[in-house]
Image (cartoon, rainbow, N blue to C red; front, side, top):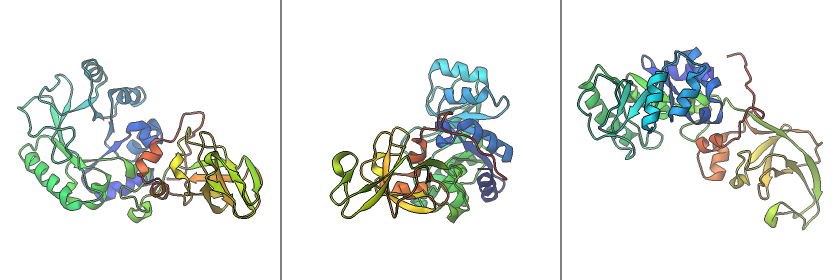
Length: 327
């Protein structure tokens, strides 16, 4: 992850990097990822909720933390006390807490159509790109709309770039860029992360819990979705949709030992099956992500995006650990 931060910093030049660590750091661990990003040069952290910000504040007492989502009056008071910053997208601007006014330049979601009358608590101006990963022409239109307002308020920190824009749309690199997916070595374009110099930070391991031979006509799993046409060895992996390995990942590939093997049959709550070329011993390592097994490839099979897959992985502390390698 530290190398990914450095890759983004090189692309951004003089633009500050603000690390987006919402949704438990996209399933990677919010605190660990925040610490790594800050240590490598990120200037601020971005989260979705006040609760996420408060959790980080307990450990990161001096970090700049921006809450980008909606909040209640009680949460505004909590943010004020914890020295959090808030994104606002309505005319009523909270007092006594630094705010970033969000303009809707084409996302059609949260945001104001114009900057409200001045407030001493407004420190930033922000917007959100809708198509930086797919339609750069529309993204450029959004950037120009936003920049026209930002130029009128040079005293405010202007930020609109996300990971895709930070990597490939130079005009988006204003005062700061809010980068999420690329921090974790995942492609905002759904392609191989290496295309943009990124390295996946998350590795997901399991092992074969059972190996069995199917005779022609025999099946594995609910609904008999996989029926052997010939004598077939299958391995059972003790991971399922309760852990974040989705039901629609049937047909994807994972690495068993050193070989890529196809997921067959129905993915269960706690297990799935892989088709083996030969009998393999119980306990053989299985890599679900990492070492060339890409979230982007899984996403194509599931007809979704890599963001959704990694955010859905169950990374509670008793199942996940932080591994520090040479950065």
